[in-house]
Image (cartoon, rainbow, N blue to C red):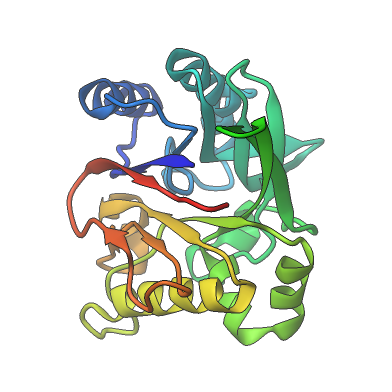
Length: 264
């Protein structure tokens, strides 16, 4: 499986952000991938509050954009966007097919209270799992079972065994973690980077499958009310059966890179 990892920041204007994403993709996408991976809330960041969330949502706009990217690059796309059901909003990880069909809308289960997520969003209730068709040199095609976590969901895999067991019971062959993960934690420089690496590696060990972590990068102007926050980057490919450290990783900066996960 070839996964294209997209690590970048977010600007306040959603149309400008879409243009930025398209420009980054046109610049970096050269080889065919099976799935393109974007970070959590990659179109909006947290540039909204309870009064402007609907304005930022704009009726399926994020899903339409993911569909356009999937059709243009002829592959599956996973990205973090705002979704709505009834009058409730969700911090979602949505997967669309090359035909722009939604095959998963995973609603983040564990909301992060420090960024007012519990005031902005409704929590999801189910593990996010989907089947990803892949070309197989022997049989022609096969499906790989994949699960998705969003940011703070990863922290809870360490704190709550019941949540980790639900992920194990979903029986994934690969896990995708999309995030807006800070570089520093509790005032400790680079502590967030260490936690990000440790938790992804631990998840790979516990669930016994590879983990692809995709993180936002850059200064969080949208969260300036919460202090000076910088998102770490450090997106990477973790497989504890091979190595306790990332098999491939980018550090800082806006970058797009491909990893190939074999033997799924």
